[in-house]
Image 1 (tube, rainbow, N blue to C red):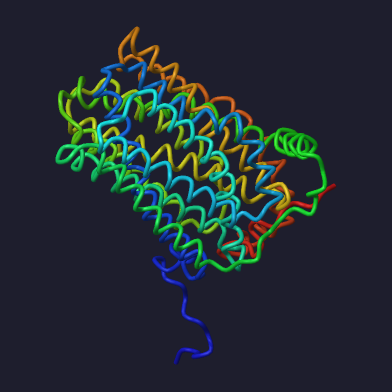
Image 2 (cartoon, one colour; image 1 turned 90 degrees about the horizontal axis):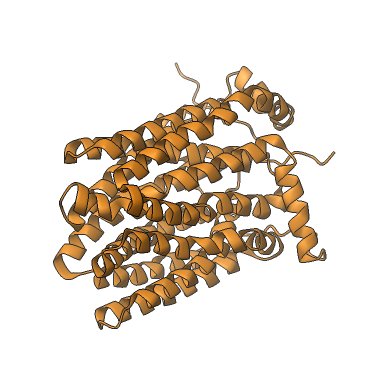
Length: 445
């Protein structure tokens, strides 16, 4: 007869979604999920609008550059602000400003007053907002989880949420653009911010703010830079993320060209391609969510990056819709597994009082390098065509993982004392699911 006092073992499904048991995180998850669908709708509609108005691949690159360069320039300062200020209030401010930006864009498009210079200006404005929003949002998650052993699961679920929106948003955008035009996509995005603002207002949490607020801004910035780039595992991950963003993110910018000129179709096809990438990415995020430990993520990063590069190369040669969709599945899987695994490792080993700055460098690498990739890929595509441009990008992704893979054994030795201090390695050895203090920061020496 079973012992009634013994708790039932956690099912695989409940374990996969265990971070949702926390009220604050659940509210955050639902609000962000709705808002991100609108964000993806706007991103797809904006690219399609610019290409429809100009027929210029180079201007698509300019659009990507304008929207993401602020993350590169302001990211480190945004990290200092996140470490010093209430992240909850920062997010309320950034989401409100995002609502204003989306509403302005919708009004101008629906009234036929939109121009390319206005689009570029609004994209720069949104980029400035995102620089502060992303840093605060990445480091805010830890304040929503009561038991830190569930932080890695929360990060994986965040990736799942992002990619579920990536699956739904572009598909809906393609249908809406074909039916009533781009303006309704921008209006839908503006309305979606109501959900995230409502969820943020309902969240009640105790803020984690650095006690070193009295330090000058540039001193704090230097401290964060030295901390992040002085430790080889953190440095290698950030540099790898920067390389992948530079070479792989241009795929999104070039998507309208592949849909219209390579596959000879319309906005619906672009939505389907983005949706296929979203399915692959969602699968990858759920694959990470079911993992019980951060152990082994280094090897997963290597394999995922190889899969990403191979997917880009195969997609660049495809002229058949079914094959292109198949390639996008693998590309999406490889990209999100590589990015989310890197995020998880960083969140695991970083100090709480430097979390905002380290995650700002992560965001700077992830989003800040993408505009340079967009600009370069747009210019290169005008010279050699989008197919050869994407083929080159795939080759460069494969080349970027080689130094990381070669350094991986040494980095394991450097991280091992941190994992031992956190209890991750002993608990894995004894068969337990995950460390009790998965994201407890390493002590200062």
